[in-house]
Image (cartoon, rainbow, N blue to C red; front, side, top):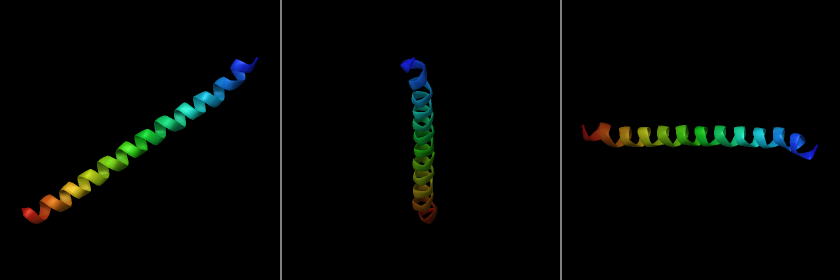
Length: 44
């Protein structure tokens, strides 16, 4: 009985973890693109 009750919580944690990692990756990618764009645009 304990395992089925613990499964939903673990699923939610994994979902939040995956969403957090995806958001972090998107944020980092956006920061890198903005940083590279800000550095490259003045040179050109």
